[in-house]
Image (cartoon, rainbow, N blue to C red; front, side, top):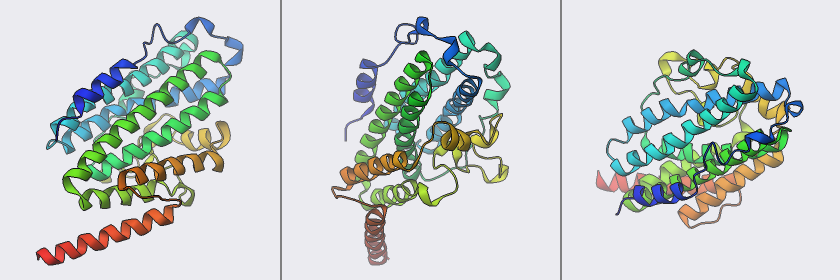
Length: 286
């Protein structure tokens, strides 16, 4: 199968925004940015910086796939630019809240090795979720420039999700039910956020057993409780918005598996079907 990286590079390059030209810095309205809002921008800037350890993880766990590893150059660049544009906003308008080098470095830590297909699906679903979080953040904010920035970021996250989906389709063609089992398992997990006490996003999951419980990106922020407060009390990411996330995950899983999944329960039944097939194939081989 041909490499996806050259095509994905061109498609993302064609729509890439420029921090100087495409952010309307001159439209800033100081009286429309509250202290509360500014502090959330700082936390999101630091969270976006965690693309650094995530990239190190992806490169380590995907040494077998130079195509996907090359794509990480694009993903890493664009995610670090997200951190940079948020920090530039603070540098211009709230310099007292610019993250320190140490605050940024605190979220760079090693992630335990994990199965590559499951990790890919986790981040695919994470991009869908972040696209919706940022869309909601753009609505919550009242200052025009940061509203514009969050819209730019949300569009990037949607494109990243689309790129990850292309790699998932590639692996489906290459390894069949092994990929189906991994994708369906994580899809069920990530579409079941209503049943969990925490927000289901890669930056909020435990990734280093030796550092537990300080082994999530969120736990290493200056304000570890920020994310839940941002979602629940500030941008108010309610059941209606969560339903949009679940709907997109189920829709994309349907595209992958050429099925229709109206509920998480239907996706879970499909996961069990695939697991049964894999077990039977393993028994036959043995």
